Length: 237
Image (tube, rainbow, N blue to C red; front, side):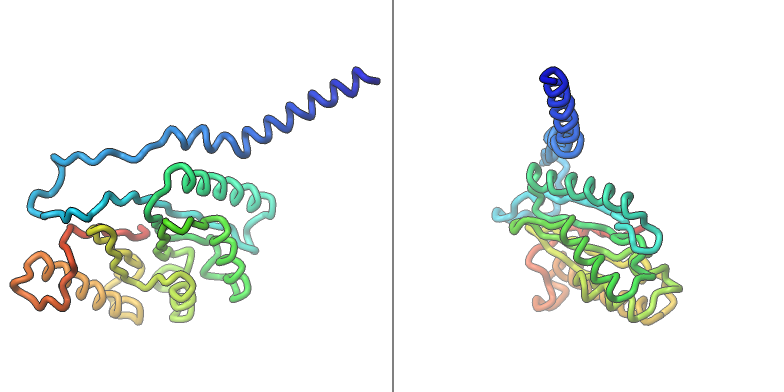
């Protein structure tokens, strides 16, 4: 009897160790090998004078998280995917400590079809998986699975996503002198729709602010940014 108990204990410990390795430790073993690139000063734009106070910005880019919805997602597939995303993301937060995270669209798989209650559940799941620490900022751009393709987008769907994630069609974000422009790519159809026209106006205003910052003698200082740098365009393609 004692031999069987010892055998069972060894099998149980082996299974638990294997499970712990594959579902937890493996993320640390893999991601600890990653490091932030070292900036080469020779590749810097010599026409831009950096400020002494500017620090390097560590940026993490994600896209197409596609959290499964209630209609097409099997519960076990959903559980498995979201656990893996949660562990990978939170391990990266712990080890790499990025300054900012951009998630570029298609956060949800069924965002364009879900009811208000289902959308609120989506939001809660998203924030539980992609929670960031106090020193890290999180910004998102919208994708077609979140609100639909251009011809399917309604004011309601667009406003629902914008209100939930503070994600207007066009947004300028400045971090340590670097300018990031988050853009709703579905708003670039150019047909003057309720979404496209305001986005084009906002994009023109941002363009003017950047040009004025680059050539301050040609514009009013009231619309200039504190420092010029080439803008980094981020969107869901």
